[in-house]
Length: 143
Image (cartoon, rainbow, N blue to C red; front, side):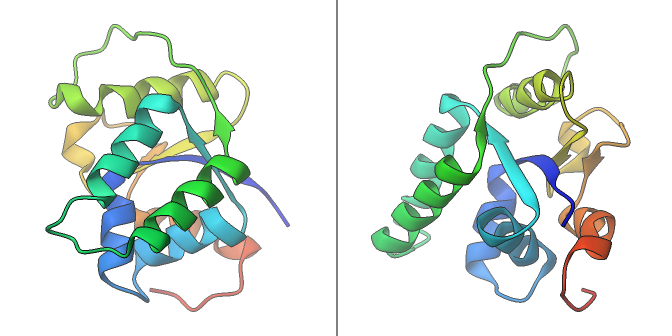
């Protein structure tokens, strides 16, 4: 099985937990059990935990903890170096910085539901695009 490296924007994880059998859900499942190796740093993990723990989502605490554990155990913690590019949303900078750092060693994708928050690069993809990229390596129906 091929391995794919990806920084997963928080909105993809939230979308996956809100609605099953969608492209974000498929991306999360592949991060937890399949061919996507999640790439993150401590700041990204803190954001995941903070957002997934918001009361408005009502995600079970055990589910949040399980996802956090799986991502941190299966993934690669990568320290990010500052970049010179200006991004539309400064809060998303860390995701792009970690992606760029990881790309020094691996072909790494940034998977997001908000393409407009990032530079227009071929490695910045939607969940649906990521599933199309990895489709030869997985056993799932097309979304």
